[in-house]
Amino acid sequence: QVQLVESGGGLVQPGGSLRLSCAASGFTLNYYATGWFRQAPGKEREAVSCITNSDGRTVYADSVKGRFTISRDNAKNTVYLQMNSLKPEDTAVYYCAARRGWGTLGPTDYPYWGQGTQVTVSS
Image 1 (spheres, rainbow, N blue to C red):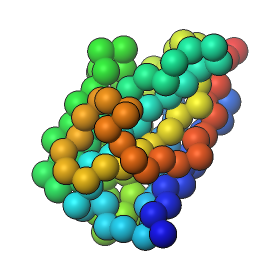
Image 2 (spheres, rainbow, N blue to C red):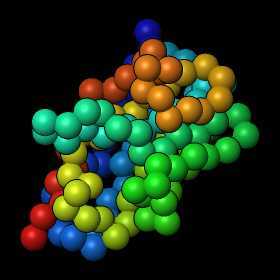
Image 3 (cartoon, rainbow, N blue to C red):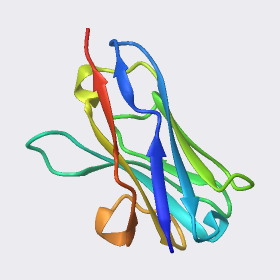
């Protein structure tokens, strides 16, 4: 059974950092790509970043370039999203998703999704 579980969300002040984790079970992430997406209240789900786990190629949305870093640990079957210099507009539920092949920023390309973790950036 394919399963993705996110963790690491929480409340942080503007300028702070958080690291999200996405642990996969039921399949080997090395043969997949993983994407991070987020959805704020009243807004559509938007792409944050993706990584092709086989070769480590990454793509970032313009809104997070230079602040967020996606990485993977294939031995732990886990993908991470390091978020620095957080802003109030980063507040959202963050989801990880997986698909076979290369990473894309299109949420409809991903058949497997986690349940999400809340990130709130506020003073």
